[in-house]
Image (cartoon, rainbow, N blue to C red; front, side):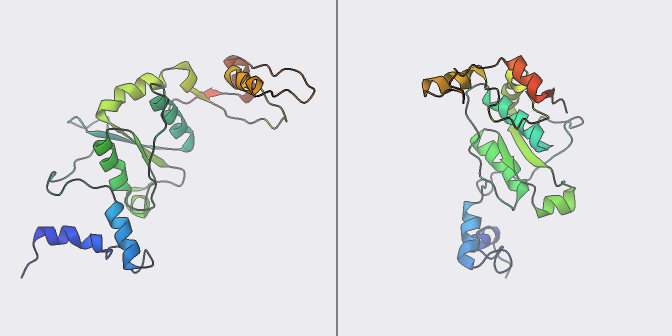
Length: 205
C-alpha cells in the first residue's frame, strides 16, 4: 500500500533524515527537523529560480553569494533605516531552506551558510556566504547602500595602541571619564580622517 503524502512529510520530524550519520541520536535529529524553517504543508507546489539579470518573472527573494567584505556592506545597508541587526539562525545544513523560507516568512533579510550540497552541487566557494533579500526589502537595502556611512570599508589595519576614534565614539569615551594615556582629552576624528588612516575603499561588486 502506497503511503499518503502527509506520511512522507511527517517522517523526517522523527529524526530519521539525520540519524545515525549526522547526529548522535534520533532525538537530536528530531530537534533539528522540528526547528527547521518550513512553509505550511501544501501551500506551495514548487520553487522557480534564475539569474537576476535574465529572469522573466518577479522573484519573491533575491539571494546574493558574497564574501565577508560584501556581506559587511549589505548588513550596513539594510540596518541604515532602523539601526537593527539581523537575528539570524545559522546552520550547516539546508542552505536552500535557510536562503528562502525565513526571508519570505519573516519578510526580512537573512544570512545563511552554504551547505555541503551547495558546495558539491552548486559550486559555492570557501569565502562565500548567502545574503537573502525579500522583494519588499530591496528598495530599503538599495537606499541604505547609497549612504556615505555604508559605502566604504577598511582595506588595511592599524596596530597603534591608541587609534583614532570616530567623533561619536570619542564622545562616549569622554562621558565614561576616559582620557588618553598622557591624560589629555580624547578627541574624535572626522570620517575622512579615519578613512585615510585605514585606506578605505568603495565596495562596488
